[in-house]
Image (cartoon, rainbow, N blue to C red):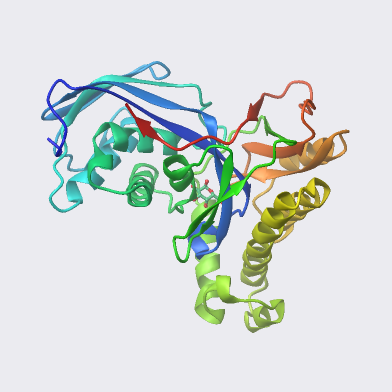
Amino acid sequence: MNAGSEMGEQIRSWAPGRVNLIGEHTDYAGGLVLPMAIQLGTTIEGERTDGSIRLRSTTQADEVRFDLPVDDPASITPAWGRYVGGVAAGLQSVAGLGVGGLDGEVSSDLPAGAGLSSSAALEVATAFALGAGDSLDRAAIAELCQRAEQVATGVPCGVMDQMASACGVEGHALRLDCSTGEIRPVPVPDDVAIVVVHSGQTRELAGSEYGDRRSDVEAATAIVGPLRTVTSLDALDAIDDPTVRRRARHVVTENARVDAFADAIAAGDLVLAGTILVAGHRSLRDDFDVSTDVLDALVDSLVATDGVYGARLTGAGFGGCVVALCRPGVDPTPPGHRSWLVRPSAGAALS
Ligand code: GLA
């Protein structure tokens, strides 16, 4: 058992999903991101046990059951148990930290596969339920959960989603510097509504595209050094491969957009903030090649809607959701699309 936890102790952990306002495909490049935890999340209720993990889910048909310690989390079935097993395996590997068992139920009001990081919420809720908060700070929990995600999915994701879920601050987005780990909460103004609209295209991250983009960014970094430190686009002329050069241009310009966007909302200039979102979308479309015709059409239609300051694809791309910055009271959702009015929420909690 973990220090401070007892057999039979009742626990309830909750962890939020996230929406990324701007700073896309920059986390694994040591860049800047500006996600916010949202009010929708995943709850685990149950009791601490010993020797095994057993979780039922209100949204998944099959329960997860495995003995501790976990040998190979990637082979757990049903597949949703891999996120749970990945977290347990990560905790086991933290020196001196035993992993107690758990018997409980998972419930969530986060839509799965929509790009709102339901998997990060499950990982972070699991980590807190297993007592990670007794020994690790929130950033370390996020990093452990990032590794769990990588193990569970085989996708070499960055740390943004788990950081937002673990470290969210009520009323704020988080400006996260992925090269230093510095987290700066940025107040989200009251006079703005943030609406997430599903494109209807299911995102499939397990494909090789995400890893390909990450490889392109690493190839660029090998030539010009950390992209976070590149201040002039001229420096990218040293990259011969035009595709790799475009990937790098996205990362460099996106890092600048994160601070420009944070400054714009701090100054209450929502019109400027909206134009920065649209510029971010174009960069993801033209330089990073992670948009789709469906996402582009949705962004165009939202931006043309009265009361919308700007919109862009959010998350990894290849489908999933668009985030729109709107005047309060405006619902820009086109007919036939699912959408969520999201609020900046605090991070994970254990009670
Ligand atoms: C996914 C990953 C994140 C990040 C985004 C793109 O959400 O999990 O780490 O790379 O894609 O910004």
